Every structure is written in structure tokens, then in C-alpha cells.
Image 1 (cartoon, one colour):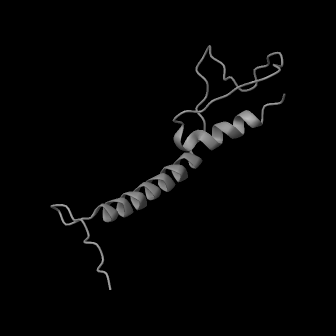
Image 2 (image 1 turned 180 degrees about the vertical axis):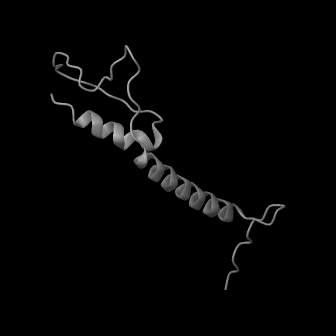
Length: 87
């Protein structure tokens, strides 16, 4: 019976697999906490002399191209906002 390959362990006694397991769990936990906190906050009012872009009207375009890069957890919220715009 072939033996299992040796587990590669660094000087602190952790394997690469151990590191990724802990890092993934920590990232998931922090993401859930951040999402829960963000859901409780209300949007800040617009500054005097400025207006929010939602609600502004413009002539319809034949084709609209939108790209998202590095939006993190806000991506789904932003996409929902854009899909809610008529036209």
C-alpha cells in the first residue's frame, strides 16, 4: 500500500491547507459581519447643492454598457439599483 505524501509544515507548525482553511473561515465570518452592519445603516443625505444620481432623467440610449471592477460586497446592491432604472 503506498504511503500518504508527507504534510508540508512551516516553521510555525501549520500546513498550507491549515492556513487556507482558517483564512477562508475568517474571511467568510468578516464578510457576514460587515454585511449585517451595512444592512442596518441608512443612506446619508445629499450634501447641500448636490443631488443624488438616482432619479435623474436622460434620453434613452440604444445600448448601455456597464462594467464592475473591484466592487466587493456592494456589487449585488449596485446591480440591483441599475436593473431598477426604467428604460
